[in-house]
Length: 140
Image (cartoon, rainbow, N blue to C red; front, side):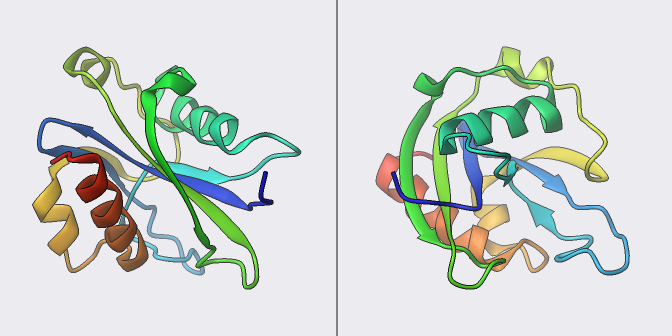
């Protein structure tokens, strides 16, 4: 397995994408911008474990690795010379209703895929990666 520093994911339900608005603290990268679930690797966890832990911490959702339908390694856009893993998968209406938003970020939203991909304050590299993943997955 390739070494990586973190993960992000595009989780869709129909033509909507799970997003959250980053905190707006001074010095925080992409402060106040729309982001996708995921985060930094802890210890020697796998990419799947990293993402699924972040989903539980950020959204209170306990998903299994079978929910991750697409995966690709990209160069990290936060750590020079490192890699990150991007996933795509689906979530259900019942899971959306069960979201318990954590303490990272201002709020979450099921945003139309097209709106996220065109949003002027969405993290640009995540827009690009989500576009690739969802086109290849046939979602949105």
